[in-house]
Length: 412
Ligand code: GLV
Ligand code: MN
Ligand code: MN
Image 1 (cartoon, rainbow, N blue to C red):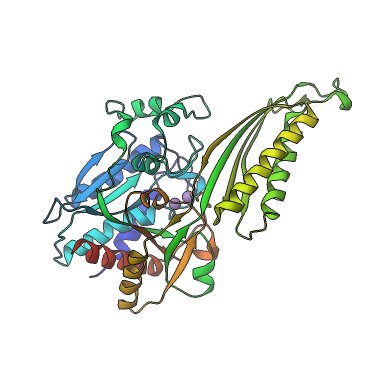
Image 2 (image 1 turned 180 degrees about the vertical axis):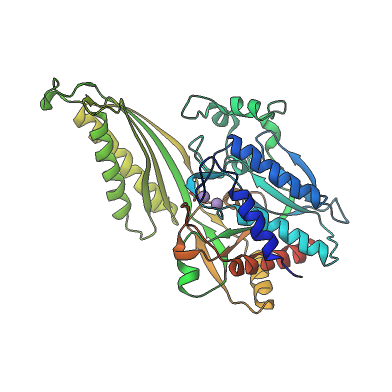
């Protein structure tokens, strides 16, 4: 089995060039023109590999290499190709193009799968358009009620149906996206670590045992605007100052949760009208809170909600708070973890078990079938930045372990 890393790196670089922003930045927001072009690029490779593809009603793409016994549940792999604003070229992409390279080397080696192998390219793992991450895999697993999906709105007020129609997906009903539990016998996602541990310890492969519990809050604050010269300080009901205090309260709650794994981020902070001589009357915040433990994650959310109530009451600010998601952590399947470890050792590499602090579509695939992830190092642990980097050798090792794992799982 020989991974052609030059071929794979070329594809990674070609995909990176399909971006809403100039290189080295990669930005591909769900159903943007760049996202649609990137999907076409992947479809071309699927055609070269003679995979049978279908796209579901939310845009998840399934590319199947038919096994000898099609009645058996398939072995799934995959990740995402959407990218947050100002991202790099490896997040998600390594798990999609890497899986296609794994299929290719298995084919080139003459391997014939007993079970079908299926690549899934998930829609909107990133939360950029609708505020909620893993949109495609949430719907696949049934974790997102359809009414909640239909109510999602982007910044411009467009809903999911609007974007599905533009992408030519609206003829199928959203209800058809959910998959039965019998679809897959296993799911394995290859991904960059998005943390520093593998690099720091000089280890090539992490095998994921648990995926941390993510949650997202959206907060709209309404104060009273006015001329910066005319509204005297005691009369102010400044939405941006309430927002600033809330962002600090998020930091405080995450730092004092009692768990070193709690992280809280106010990653979206917008104010209106945005004029230097005008008191801000509106603010929008999006807040991300995660932990490996549900108890401390939920405790932190409660403290943040209390802080929002108190700050807004003291500052006479109206608010609307929406909890978009508050997911449980995923526990990976120990048998699959052991299989990946065995394949890694066969290749004379040392695997290490890890927790994924980032979320991934595997968080929701784990609700459908035994799931794990293969992590490879990334430089400095950097991700969600244009300078995100994994070396060709690191990617090659990950793809070889993925190919070996898929080969084993689809052979029985
Ligand atoms: C995924 O991109 C995450 O935010 O964990
Ligand atoms: Mn990401
Ligand atoms: Mn990712």
